[in-house]
Length: 197
Ligand SMILES: [Ca+2]
Image (cartoon, rainbow, N blue to C red; front, side):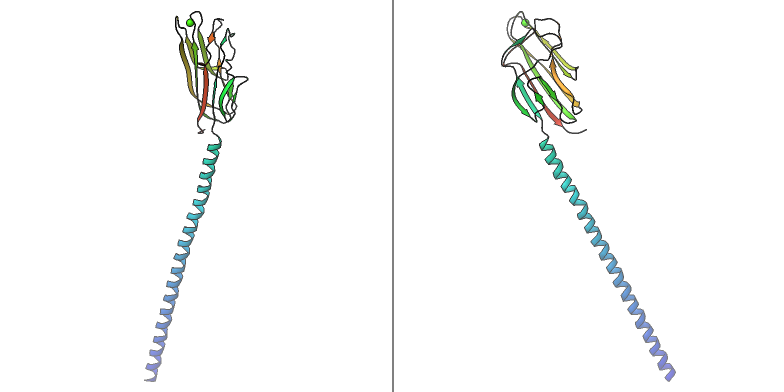
């Protein structure tokens, strides 16, 4: 009988030990799962922070890199030799300071896409107006207008991707000295479209 009792106690102890072990294992599993969840949350936070910072910086940089200009003729110009630059000295707007009113040339401050427009006027019977829009001397647009009786305007325009430092200006392409560029109606404008490389 005594032996039987001893055996029963032993059995009970073993069961108790097994239950304790199981409880410990469950606790360990729960801890591991909790640690994993915490790590995932931390990772998400650490990934989100640089994204927010870089987005903010990008917007700030783009706002500071806005470029635009507008220049015009207040007094007439004529009889310009072929290959000369049509300089528009009256600068109305020069945001970013990329247009030089003394040389008539725009220098791209950033590698980006830009839009340029220019209008000229032929107001005389015995004159004509002619323009070419050039990037570093290479023509990207051309116009010639020659009215017989009344004033007539014409324009050049282009959207071009420029590397920082490239220059854009209005060139007088013809050799005939009878060219004429009317005051008030002759203007040159440009602006940055986007910064994509
Ligand atoms: Ca004419």
